[in-house]
Length: 214
Image (cartoon, rainbow, N blue to C red; front, side, top):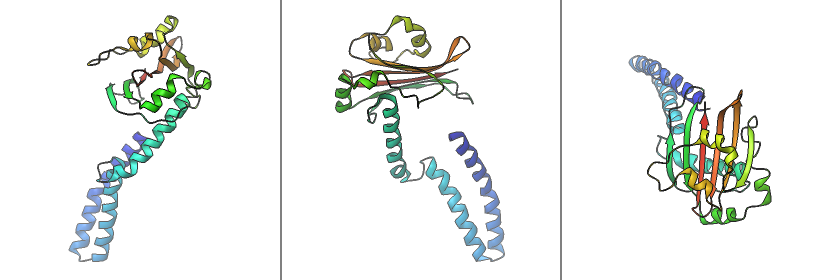
């Protein structure tokens, strides 16, 4: 979707000098109705990308509620519980290839109500989530209680990242009791090709989301 709008934005920008030239000709020939019409079209073509990319003042008032709703829906598919992520306390992302290959990790705070829920989640949390709706063609390992099963080490190795500037590592979260982990993965022949790896820590009030595509 983003690549499509990048392409459309490029097309729109290419129209700017064409419209500007036509406006100049209309102004020179004193054709005011045509000039005003072209001015309106140019203004609209300037506003559309600015609105979509949130550089237009006030555009966040429209996009923020939509993004929050999408985030809640995503978290429902992920855990069966509706909540919004709180403060982003850690982020690391590599550059993505044209096909999406790359690595990203985000660590968010969760609020007290969400943390309290995950201290004793519903039984379906362990049998239905993450939902098949999230990457339906990938294999799913539903939520499990920590400590982490060492037989799954190859999946952690593929998702692993050193957490710089934090007082803990992923292993700390996975081997302390009271937390949960889950992951979805896609195999390339006999090797892991892509993975989404998740950790929820009610006591620390954290959720970790990792994506690694190759």
